[in-house]
Length: 384
Image (cartoon, rainbow, N blue to C red; front, side, top):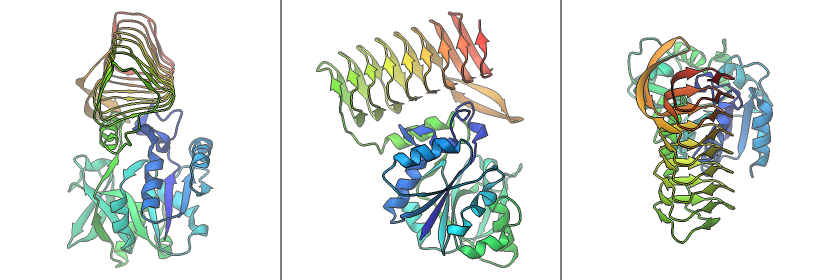
C-alpha cells in the first residue's frame, strides 16, 4: 500500500509560529510533527510514501532529505485545498493508498487498522468539533460529513486519515477532501468509520502544550552530554550530545533536552518540558510544562511555565510567564484559552518582564523592564 502525506498547508491558526516554518515542521517533544507520521507509516510496513509540499516547501524538502527514509516529493504550487493537493500525487498512485495530514500526530496502531479497510475514515471524539470535518455515523458507517460547520450536530470528527483507492478521484470536483467524500456518499458508496487509538492535532499554538506533554511520554531515555554529579534527575529524561547539566540542578521527567545546551547550575526543570538544541538556561531558573525551541536563552531567576517559546528568543533575567484564562479573537472568532505565553521567533524581553496569557509575534522587542504584557502583540513590534 502507498501513503500520501499532505504537508503543503500554512497552518495560519498556529501563528506566529508558522510565519517562518510550515506547521508540519513545528517541533513537538523536539521532533517535527511530520516525522511522527512517517515513523508511524514505517512501523506499519508502508515504505512507498509521497509527500505533497507547498508553503515554505524548501524547508520541508531539506528536512526530508535529512531523514533515513526515501520519500517522493511533489509540489502544490498554490495552496487551494486538500483535494487540490492530492491531485498532485495522483500520477504516482497505483492502487489503494492512505491519505494523511503531515501536521497531525498519528500512532501506528491506528494506521494498521486503516490498512485493513477500503474506503474508510479514521474518526475520533473531540470537544471542539467545529474546527474539523464533523461526521455522522450510523452502524459503523459514515452517513454525512460536513467541513468545519458553525453548529456541529455531534462530537465525532474526521482525523484527516483516509483509506482510499484510485476511484476516489472521480468524486473530486472542488478543492476539499470532505466534499469529495460527501459526493461518494451521495453516489451510494459506503465509507466505514474507524475509531482512532491515538491522534492529536494542534489547532492553536497553545494546543502544542498538550501535544508536547503527550509525546514526551514516548521519548527514549538516552542521557548523553555532561551531567554534574550533584544534579538530581528522576523519571524519563532525554539529554542530547554536547549538553551540560550544571551542579544542583533538579530535573523531573518526562523532559527532553536537545544537543549542545547549557543548563544551570541550580535550575529546576519540571515535567512535560521539551528544550531544543543550543539552548542556554541561566542559574536559578524554573521551567515546567513548556515547549522551548532551538537557540533560546533564558536568563537567571526566571520562571517559565505553560509556555511555547519560538526559536532564537532571548528572555533576560527575572522573566516570568503567568498562566491565566483569557478570551482571544483569532481569525474573527472568539475563544477562551488558559496558558502562560506563546512567543514567536526572535523575541527579546527586558529584565523583570511578566508575560501574562499573551501571544507575542515574531521579532518583537520588549525594551522596558518591570512590564506586564498580555493579549496579542503583532510581529515586529517594539514595546517601550
